[in-house]
Amino acid sequence: MALSAGVAGASAAGLTSCGKGDDEPSASGANMRTYGERAPQEKTQRVIRELSASPGTGSSRTPLQDLYGIITPSALHYERHHAGVPAIDPAKHSLLVHGLVDKPLIFTMDDIRRFPATSRITFLECGGNVVGEQRGIFPETVQGSHGLLSGSQWTGVPLGLILREAGLKPEAKWMLAEGADACRMARSIPIEKALDPEVLVAYGQNGEALRPENGYPLRLIIPGWEGNTNVKWLHRLHLTAEPAMSAKETAYYTEIRPDGKAEIFTFVMEARSVITRPSGGQKLTSQGFHEIVGLAWTGRGKIRQVEVSVDNGKTWAEAELQEPVLSKALTAFRFPWRWNGEEVVIQCRCTDETGYLQPTREELIAVRGLNSGYHYNGLRPWRVKATGEVVSA
Ligand SMILES: Nc1nc2c(c(=O)[nH]1)N[C@H]1C(S)=C(S)[C@@H](COP(=O)(O)O)O[C@H]1N2
Ligand SMILES: [Mo]
Image (cartoon, rainbow, N blue to C red; front, top):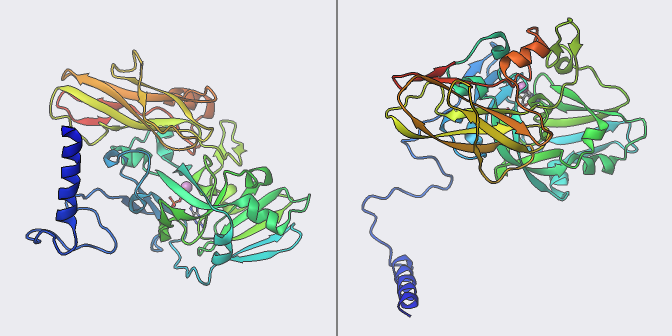
């Protein structure tokens, strides 16, 4: 009785103070905003690396050390542009489907939005995240070593629906996806993958339209495959019998094996994990309890297990996976830890649902050699010094 009276009383009070014409005088409040911004005290940002004299060509890295959960705010999603960011008017944008199809078609953005849409949370990782580690160049921070990695909820149309609308000829075995940027970046995708219902022609990112940097107004999303195959500013799909052997699948994004031959079409991103807090560049200011947190992900499905070692790799213990654990999405983990003030190396390793265990750097080099660095997924140890400073180990 007393409780329900109290609840009723509270909601009645709430109604009064929020009612029309009855609002509190705004002594210290700021104006409302039609489009939100973060609090001025929040300063975390991407780190930009220009790779060419032409503006906007290069990469920017997500500040993984400062983020929570498995979704990267769109404004902090990593970027990789091979020829800058094109300014595209969605009203004039279209997607051409041609080649080995029954009827070549051109879809406007309005046409594409009429298809049934689906949304999917996935990670996106550049195949070159980060190429130097295999050769022993260790960035100081997790943003430097793993920042070409982000997680988003993408919304769009399953690519297969669009391809079936045009009708595939039996000889169509590959699909070239081409972007509308200055270099017309293009990748060949095997037809079985193009028809995988997971693959999206996406126009939405985290609940709103894609950001220009992430492919506005239309991009390909191939969950679990190397970032480069997720063609942005998508404007052409060419169905062919053979792969096109485009620049980004021959001169780049291939791996030179120890015998000197190149591995081509290495699409899947293998399981990888990293501790994001505490990580390089941060400092523990007190002994005692600290929570170790990090991310794990795999292009082969779900993460099954993450283990953490806080004794220089001697012993490993299981970390707690945070729900939701989604296929081909970032998975957050946590591990409670008591730091006794001594210098120690902390690290994590993950196993995915296929049973694949993330390798050490030494194990990885034993198999792949040192000629290449794409798809590097070795362990990433951090050294916590007695001063509390965290550096790469
Ligand atoms: N058209 C086009 N698509 C592209 C690229 C590009 O430069 N042009 N970069 C690729 C690379 S190398 C990666 S890792 C991802 C990066 O996607 P993001 O910038 O949205 O993070 O997009 C891929 N798609
Ligand atoms: Mo990339």
